Length: 323
Image (tube, rainbow, N blue to C red):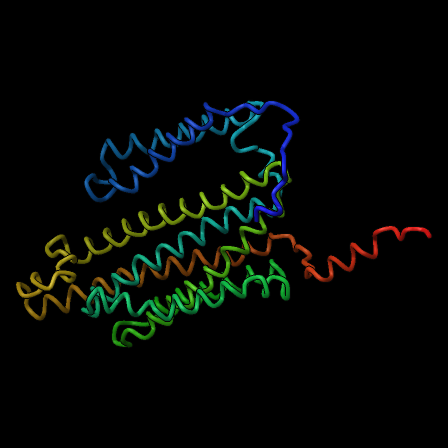
């Protein structure tokens, strides 16, 4: 890598740092993270504090957007979003972040709470997912070059939707195998899509905006995971509260010492209700992935040539020296 770095960079003009934009964006993201951390846990979603944080987050994001439109050197250039492919990539990255983090967060809860397996065993059941995802990530470049970015993005989102749908349909009577298969399909598909969206974002952006375009893709994925896990967790908690009437704590299913205090009928009831609530979460994940599948149709097809073909084309285009 050092070999291909330029020996010297000569700046053509003095750059300025958008300090106000950094402060506004950092403050907005901090408020957003506090909402996801406190909402539904230490504070109710309808509390004054959470409502104030939501208002502050919206105001700070609005102020940030207004500032970026008028500042000479914005932190996030607005013209970056004039490209349809980049707009779509940001939306797809957000939805894929929701799917990935929701799957890896709530599937272990499903395995431990519904089937009563230990945390260690639950982790070992993710081993096939890790192996498949690692193997496919190595072949991402091959797939992109052979079938194209747009088609690969469509297939990965469709596979993730099928994986979530499979977990939502399969009940606890089917055992743990549907959950293991479903999360393996979801994680493998979404893991395969991450470098695809990163490259689409880089190719869609101008050369001068390449750095911010890349970092914005990574940030959006993290935001999707943070917001998605919090929103789905709030939905699951609300559904369980309506089902159980607040008389039982589902967390008792995760503590062996607490299970001894419950009767067999209470344990079965809690596990069935937790299963229904989590399968609703998986169904929402399937809907999100279906939306992402449709959004991939907005991507513009990017022509990809293998390296040897590019070299041949460059050699043919170069002038032949005259003798």
